[in-house]
Length: 337
Image (cartoon, rainbow, N blue to C red; front, side, top):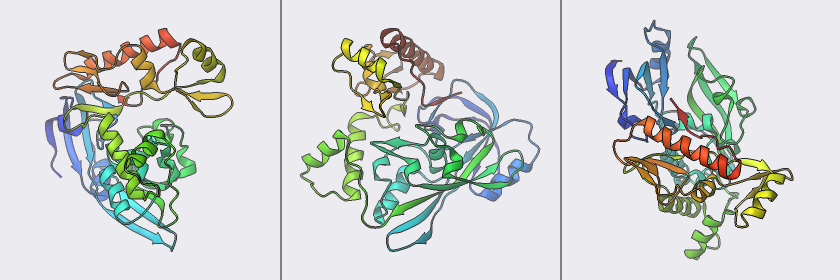
């Protein structure tokens, strides 16, 4: 293990923000991870996975551990289902494609989400009607203060919309090293209810889609709406879709008849944050190299050399305008550091 000093993190975060780490170490095994955690370190430890859900606004005066532990293993299988474990450093989309190649169903709607497997439970990633929690069995993690391994079940993770115990009660205390899923091998339950997926399948005249068909439809949709982080720095959806009361929704519906919505229950309605942002006139706007994507107002972008602080300022302006216009408080989906 060789520590690098004053390491640029530009290639380690999907926003492409050029900040530096005082110390940087790539971790390729759980043994390496435990060894470094048990050593005396002068700097605080900062965990960096795929860097897909963060906005870096300053240099990190820390020992940055880049989790790059690879490996996929079938733990158990029956005629109908399979238990698969992926290590934290596996690229999420590549893992999803591996599962589809084996005809393991359940993750196809989560295709092309950037990041690594290890960070997926933290955010309870989701897309097109599916969330990670739907197939999650458990995850293994190492406690930073002791180097001890432990297992978190789905119940213990306390999954909610874009949320988990790792963003709340135990934030900063554990490093996820592997994640286990239960997937189907036949009689796959496909979630194609989102209009965009139905339309994409209809265009291809596919009436009985396979999990690969659904995955390809999702990839096509995401590519048409979301910029490739390799070309334009971004972190996908910057804000959560807000949930408001049915009373407030009816009030807004009277003012804005075309407002889109998704009913959660009798009391709660989810509103697309992208629509709110677009109504405030931000879609496609640019301030230097920081801006809002031209095709999806929910995505903030770094066109080249924007700083994290510049992108943060754009997000704060958006939050203020949405609050003033709709009386809805937007919450950021990304972690701001």
